[in-house]
Length: 389
Ligand SMILES: Cc1cc2nc3c(=O)[nH]c(=O)nc-3n(C[C@H](O)[C@H](O)[C@H](O)COP(=O)(O)OP(=O)(O)OC[C@H]3O[C@@H](n4cnc5c(N)ncnc54)[C@H](O)[C@@H]3O)c2cc1C
Image (cartoon, rainbow, N blue to C red):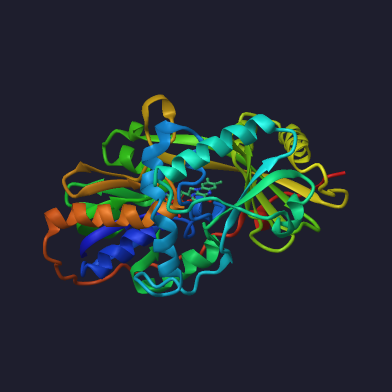
């Protein structure tokens, strides 16, 4: 079966690469082994970062600030169908995020304020934080914040995004048996089917490690950073925001559907080290109550879900600054977007890289006999919930 490009993995990275390559005229197909976005994309908070959060951390992250600063505007255009890919079917659950400086943390306030204005003045931030007057603060922050800023970073429902992007190419996206995949001298074998791509994109998130190993490459190119994300369910007012503590995002809270909070940020990195889930839930509640002391959780439920950030390896396992697309063998590119928001940049890079080799699109004879994958389920639909009290 002749193909121009075989994309492995149907998360944000693989789907955006498929779209980019097909728009460039190539016969590209995508194989997904479980469900679209199963892993990071469906587990993510869907914030289209513009660098505002990175800017808090220090000068070493200026690269990340620069790389992400144009993303909110690029996505906004796609989300209204003004540019390709037309993602107008994606649900925008908030047009902005808030940054809030919690009461009881004056040092954090001074640090963050000074740093924010420095970065904004340096012209690095496309999405500058704007101070919000007290009357307009989100309900959840009314008695818990010292100051609130607004950042023009949209938040999307990741399931609807995966559906909208996949719908553009559904006849070229296949659910296959990933365990049966073998890299052979004459192509890629999956059981009886022989695929003969001119080029391949490994965009399987955490699955890239195994794929690299199977292809005889160095699986050590990937690093995994574990997270334990917190979910709250109850009478919770909508909140999309980062709690800034000491120049870091202590909590990042989003409201993917009414009455559910998804909580990440530094808390998720710390809780990842706690093996006991009951202890992790208790520690999460201490932290949430510390920064949102007025929040009434008497009738709320809590859950923890584990996630893994799969990225290109960096020195000392630090967060990579930007996207990573690396030609590991002739015609084989391994790709990690680092952030959902960076998937468009990754797809541009992968397409440019492959165009150097592929040049003109080739033809194709047939397509694989496999079904279309569904979109992965949201973490709050799969979580095991416990009463807070
Ligand atoms: C908890 C969490 C919150 C986050 N929040 C944000 C945020 O708010 N904003 C932001 O910009 N970024 C966020 N990120 C980062 C972002 O989600 C990821 O960078 C991005 O989704 C990665 O996309 P991906 O396609 O590379 O990987 P994934 O989304 O993990 O997709 C990989 C796909 O490959 C498939 N696969 C695996 N193995 C194989 C195989 N052998 N063959 C075929 N398919 C295979 C999987 O089933 C899956 O569908 C978050 C990440 C996490 C974990």
